Length: 259
Length: 321
Image (cartoon, rainbow over all chains, first blue to last red):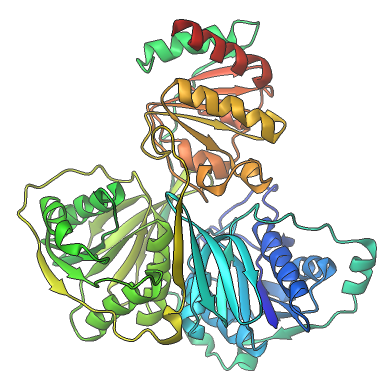
């Protein structure tokens, strides 16, 4: 079974984020790391591949400047190889353009199962995985909280408003997992060393046969008009608890008439 | 704007609150509002959808257990590609709404604007508002190419108000053949025992974060929420840590809540969290770190240990009876 895990390499969320003043898109020029959301997808992919004999996991990503730091993390966790699409013409791509590029790259791995996170930590549009599934002509099951597969079908517990649904789909299929579904492994020292020699195929738009005019800023069909400060909340009363914290909250709740 | 379609989701008690919010918003932007619905009993939705302004309901019909994403997107795309295109489609930022949006975007080859919290018309185009950087800033965006524009809208962005319209006309809009894409089928449904109000509808929300120290301490959050007849929420950090299910998550990647009172216990206030609760009318924060960003949005901030303050608060509320 060929399992593809889609990952995004993002600016470290712990570092302050900023918008590029000329394009008003997120500044991604600094060092990138593996999106934490995706570590769950990679772990899930590795576990599922481990349960079906003859399976391996391919990591697929799109990032500027040939960035592979996050991919090496995923390879160190145990993925067999990675495909990175990197092309200057991709800067400023909207979600659909991103999905087209990822779909073309994923296709090369001839996937039986594609795993992605429900949404990225930085852009969080949350539409890319389903767009990829549609472009690949696959069924998709989003918001999975549990996934099992025998290599022919995939069974998913899918989060709903009321609880969860048992959903079943034939493969090939795409599944998005919510954070916290599995415990992502820490790469071992051995894994980190092995990752250095694992194959990372770096592709350009030309390699994928995609017209640069259709993607990136050139192909974007939406624009950000302005970014303004939101209405600030007035600062409230901040007090250090001297044993009376609970009583202060009770008084506040009374004032707000919720008790 | 001539015509807007609204993806209408329904539960057992009729259209979801978010659906009614979208219909209300659509009404203020377009002269004609029409809905797209599915399931075995669309006829019963004609009255409530009509009351909120829809004049027609395109009925995709019973999905035979398929997840809605593929068949509903297929039905909408068939109408649009057949020449019957609205100016815009508003979709709810829900589990199924986002699935439909992604598929529809790829089928129509149109981009989609998500996490929309505001919509207005300017120069004949819809301009959106999106909270960025934890809601400290608002970005405005619009489509620059041919429509229909696809907009995925977050809950509580608009206030639902009935228009007093009569029942909508039901028009059949079958999905057609979805091929392999429609292969995901629901085999069984499980409702988790829900006590108290829903997270995004509760007047009081009590949320816990990593400051609780461990999964066991979340029981304090649940107990306090129950005493206040509210709902229990969580920061992404403790959902990621596996302490509580995703359905409790408040924030950018979880639910948006706007209760009368929001109590944040042991939550530092990462931008990821603030965007989901900043619209609350009143915010109470308990955190031992005086510098925690949550205090910048708090109406009442208690700098203290949640393990002392929460039990004392629970005890005080119990004594009131």
